[in-house]
Length: 286
Image (tube, rainbow, N blue to C red; front, side, top):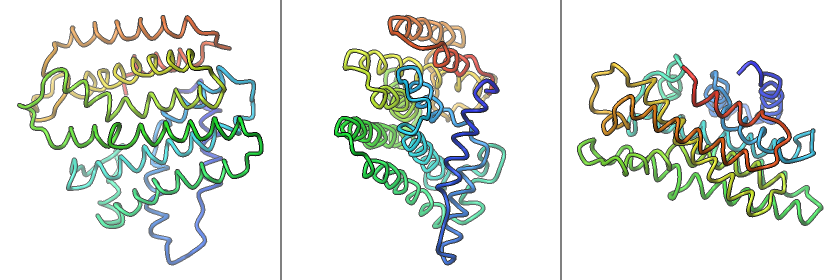
């Protein structure tokens, strides 16, 4: 992640500058949101959006993508706050710190998550309101539509429902993969595709980016399972190791990685930054 420190700092500075409150009566709500937004997240999804945009755009300022990168992180953060709640995963710790509802109470955590989702749209709408070029506006609308479709019932939220509603004994390998593609993969893929949309990629290139994003998203979750579950005797948590051996999962990760590399190799990119970052996620130990 050190190679991308400057980009992360630029993102965090942008996020911090827009994340202010003016009503002291709402201070607790904003502190709750800030607590989770700035709790040590690796900024993986906004980085994917920024790097993809940079590969296919000549806009060095990143002004067009930054509001969407911020929205992506807000959506991701709200989903984590809600996932940790007693009615969902009932977790006490997140990134080594007490979860939001443990610090601020359940009601405040719910509202903080709701507010982050709302703010993500407010930021994008404010950006679009200032656009004068009709083509830029069209790209922004397409990117916004893709983002909120990917995080709704047919994406992240739907995947979370599958995760909490189905008992482990009711899962199949295909259903587990489908849950991964929705709950984790949809926002990862959206981050990549949105970068391409705003950079002006044509439909053929966007199709390739969608396929690339799907490979990265599923590989990322498989690696998560290997990190979290190797040697763990807890059989209640659904993961791909219920259906595949460790060796088989590693082989599948290699296949997905090779496919992703092949897809990106067919495209004209300005550097290897996106590829290198994605493969660092797949080979990570965190």
